[in-house]
Image (tube, rainbow, N blue to C red; front, side, top):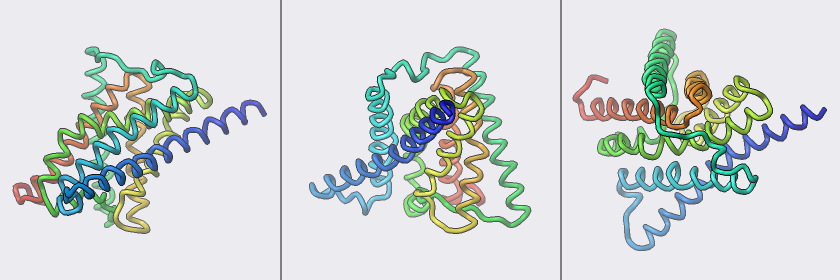
Length: 246
């Protein structure tokens, strides 16, 4: 019974962290956008500015503040998050993790194309189609804010919290499930397409979780995540501008 209670508390805490962090990000983004609109900055009319505010205040500020506030509130301290200067072994994990991650996406994409299954689209893709410069902006932001911010919350805190009660692999799986479901709020589409998108994330996310688990260094999954996103945005820019066949 005690084990069940401990695991229940850990699971509810992880879910609260995952969804609470996203809700906090939405609030900060809306506040920042409201302030900019109040002083005459046309945030909604400029896709690149919309994305910049969203990423900076969301993944950059909100996720970090929410994660650190939780650690302070629970007395776990900042050392709870395992981060250090990468070693040669860490860089090996980063390169290998990126290759496996992207190969996994290619394999899944081939299977979906074979069966004619369509995935939902992230709303950022729509903004990028309106202004391709959005994709160029997102390339550095992937390394500076998106990768580090999301990994800090979902691997450094959520997965670590689950690890305390469930152990290594269940924590990776549960954290990946929470991470996947959070993205439902940023998707355009419905029904099967949304489930397919979330399924892809759930299948690939354990690679990030395993990279963090086996290196005990948050820099590694952050780099893998950032590099993957940056490559995706770079390819999207080339396709949107007609430099690469879609």
